[in-house]
Every structure is written in structure tokens, then in C-alpha cells.
Image (cartoon, rainbow, N blue to C red; front, side):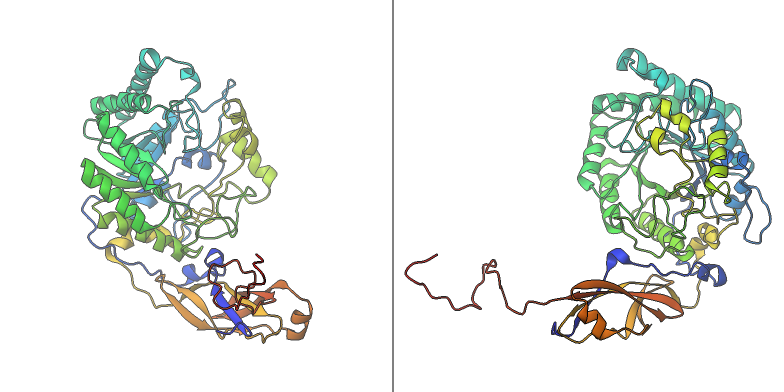
Length: 516
């Protein structure tokens, strides 16, 4: 195409900004059937914050608006596993909770009893920390800080794990799986040497085999886009002969690469080491909005991938694709992370903050400063994922909650536009501005189609006269706002004008007396 007119590009980083929030609610969801879904496949949800949520006044409602018990709703909609994190002592010296649900073993027991009443077993996620453990930090609990690894910490881990599991067993809680750490990317419980990491995991493994001999034992890592790291960690666990069953991973499409890569990495580990594989955490945004006056980790901006619309249908497509990926490689399940962590209030930051502090229903309370001064102690606040839940900001079930059941059979729906992609257009100041007649749309089955667009009127002469600049041109397509990023540029028609390219065949050169 001659640059004297325009060059049009789809901007992947600016994908899917115009999903209509009400579309999925007003229309039947399209749900693709997951093929070859094995019997007993785990379709789980982490609801670790639920007790703090309810203490803060949150109520949960079904799709018809009837107040319901959360666990009964989850079971009815096809969830068959409840994941709950366990922190050793998430309280400061005055007994004030660090937040994030204040998830100690007592909370896990209460959640486990309610899950059992709904016929749901637990996946117990030991962080072996007093607060959040993730790839960036794996802090030892206060009580274990400075312990000698062999003489003190390993026995403490085994005793603690055994005692926690015994409390669950005494309460009649069914435990299907136990995690030995959370996103342990080369660190665990303050240890950074793999021999010591193994010792911690081995202590936990012994306790699980003793108290819940039929439960699966899992390890859990993050960042599967780094396949070499996963291969290395799996080989180290094999080298030390750790007794475990499941190699688990987090998979958030914003950060963790493609599903094809995920399948390749996990299937290689499964085949090489004879382990089961599972996605322990995934989720997707149903809106870019924030519901509790405390910023979200995912929104319109940010340097991360957005392969699905931020919509209820986008959530369904993401989860279905992850479940299909696991089914394709013989994986044993997928867990949706914190699908019920909705705002505790919508009136003001001040009103919500009081609840986060008192009940621990935000991601962190200010009291976490004592344990984690450089992160939670500075950036404490509300839910950072209230736009990735399966309930709306008022606690009402979104249509996406039904996906756990529906992906087993599939559900058809008329093909429709789910969101529009932004378009980028480069135009030469000396050329003609020709806006495209269509824009690419993402359909409810996640396919792409071009749809007709009508752009707002532009003043071409004024745009050229203003020189090199960028503009957002708006229009309408399929009843939605369309966006075109217009960049007015001065195009250099001289090929290799700086002579920096190695191929200078387009130039005739003459040597003047050996000059360089």
C-alpha cells in the first residue's frame, strides 16, 4: 500500500476496549463443550476470603436475585472442589488481622465444614507463611524465623501441617488435595536453597500421608511461560525424591503466555516424571471497572495481554479454553481464583477501609506492616480482583458462574459481537486520510469478524495543518463505540535515507579520491 494514503494496523495491546457490560447478561452465553473431559476432573474455586467478606456485610445472591449460601450455589453450578489458603499466624501482636481473609487454620476449618455441608471437598493450600506467599516473596512465619533448618524448622513444619490437617479431619472436613506451598518459584518458607526447600516440602508431605492418606499431594509454581524454570524445578524435585502427586501451576493469560506453551510444558513434566498436572489458579475480568475504591490489578491499561474481552462471555471463554487445554494433556483440573471476593461496600473508600481493617476483607490491612512493611504495610487496601469475580459488585451471581456445569455439555447461542478491537492508522501529512470502512470485532465464540463502522466527522485540513500528532477518532459499529488511533506522520520517501542499512543498492555511489 502506498504510504501517500494510510497504513492500518490492529493494535493487539489495545484489544477489546469496547465490550458492553450488559450484553452477556441480556443474551444467552455461548459455552463450548470441553471435549474429552475425564471423569473426576476438578472444577474448583478458591473462596478463601468468604468469611471476612460475610463479616463485612457481603451477601450472595443467585442469578434470580435470591439470597443464598455461597457453597450451595457453587455446588449447584458444578464446582466440585473448594480451595482455601492457610497462613500460620496472620495477626499482629495485638491480635489484629493482616487481611486477605485472615486465613488461618481456624478459618479453613470453618470454610471446610460449610463446604462439606454442600458436598464439596477441600484443596488445602499451605503457604507456610503468615501472609501472602508468591514468586516475589516467601517469608517464614514469625514463629519460625531464624530457626535451624534441620533441628527446628523441619520438625515445626511437619508438626504444624499434621496439627492443621487433624483439626480439619476432626471437624469432618473432606480433603481431596494438599498443596505444599504456594507459587514456590525457587523459594519457600524463607528458604532459597533447593535442598532446604525439599526438606520443607518433605516434612509437609509426611504429615499429609499420615492424616489424609488418600489425599493428593501437590506442589505449585507460577510463570509457566518460563518453561526452562519449570523443567529445572521438576528435575530438582525428582532428584530429591519428593513424595508428591500433582505438579500444579498458576495460569493467568495476562502474564503467563499461551495455552499451547502451557500444554507443552506441563505435558513434558507429566510424561517425564509420571506426575499429574493441574491449573491451581486462573481468572479473568468481567469488567474493567473497580467496585470498592481500591485499585485492581487488571484494568484497561497495563502492560499485559488481554486475549479475551473484559466481559462475562470473556470469562467463560477463558476458563473453557484453560479446561480444554488441561483435558487435552490429561490434566486433572482447574481452579478459579477468588471468584467471590466482591466489594464489601460501594459508598466510599472510608466506609470500605473500616471494614477491611476490622474484618480483613481487603487484600491487606495496615496491621500487616508488622510482618510485611515493604509491601502490604505500604499498599494495604481492598480487593484487587473484584472485577474478576463470578459475582457482580452487589454479590449477585453473574451468568459466568454457570460455566462449570455448562462446559460439560456446551451451550449454543446466536453468533454476536462481544467487543471491538481498536485500530491504529498512520497517515502521511501530505497524503489523503482514508478511514477504514470496517473494524475487527471479537465474537462471543472468540472468533474474529470485520463489522461496518461509521466514524465521527473529521476536519482533514485541520489534522494536516497541526503537523505530526496523534488523535483518537471515535465512531459506531454494531451499536458500540469504535476507536481509531490516528497518527499523522511525515513520511520519508527516500529508501535507506540514513545509509545505515547494509543494502545500499538503491544508491549510486562515486568515490571521490578515496574519501570515506
